[in-house]
Length: 112
Length: 115
Image (cartoon, rainbow over all chains, first blue to last red; front, side, top):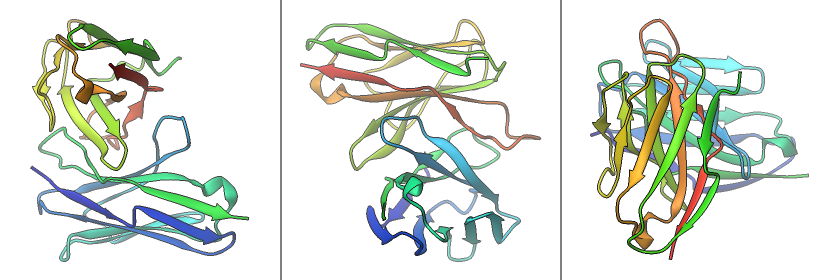
């Protein structure tokens, strides 16, 4: 099956700085890559996703990039704010299956 | 529209006891999933279902059983609980992967402790 690795496991940034989280995947058949944010004690929620036919996608302060050749994708958060503090999970899946494989999560702390 | 609802929210079991976690969704989603979340391990898929009456094994199915007798419900059972099954369990649902995004909608989670 698919193997998704995520780094770093913890990340601290000063408010206003940028944060980058990286994930790699093993199965070249994976073609859908979502990112989920989980605030403390809450359920994970989708914040952005990207399909394999797109190299980059932006939504206000967050962006995701995908390098299919290298099989890695990254989440970029600019102008970080304290409310960005949470655990972020990347995931990979493919159209032919219905399983989502998650990374181990990155705990982001934004220091005011 | 409640989305995805899990019951119970918390449960403490003794080793060897059995229990069932119930997941209900009111979004008419075809796909439903059970994940477990452990520190440093992320979300790992236990079982999933692609429609009423169907179930399939995920990454970590051992020690769990599931049933999807009705489209809106997905039950996760532990026949003989073990301390290794202490975890937070999340149910999720999604529409399909064709036209839609495939977004997973999660329940609030169920914290299970096995003593």
